[in-house]
Length: 151
Image 1 (cartoon, helix red, strand yellow):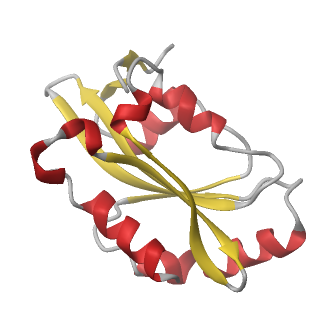
Image 2 (cartoon, helix red, strand yellow):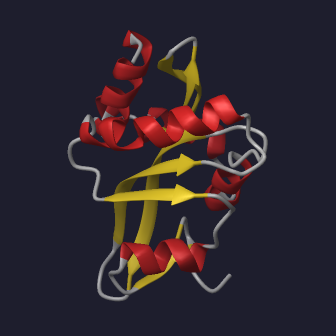
């Protein structure tokens, strides 16, 4: 793993960003590049303002690229205010190059072990719905990214 990837992973774990919530990392997209896990792109809250963040997440699921995505998911349960959970998504669509698929599948468990505190890890081959993510969070989730899970 590159030092840039380690730094971005460290930053997404740090939720305060000097008190400015607009600078908070929401997505870190990583790929297998030149024999290492490296950052391909990151997105901060400020870049997502005014957008449906879950729909944006779905747009990161490129059918031609296998990748890892760290997603700072915001949700609400029936008995609570807003919560957040850091999710690890291993995206392995069938149409991705075989080298990327193999690398993601082989590195999935070792990569997950480098990420303490990740409670949910998904291995996805096709896009999923809000309802599916809500069920996986398993806490009577009623909203994800400010929209009902039934939406």
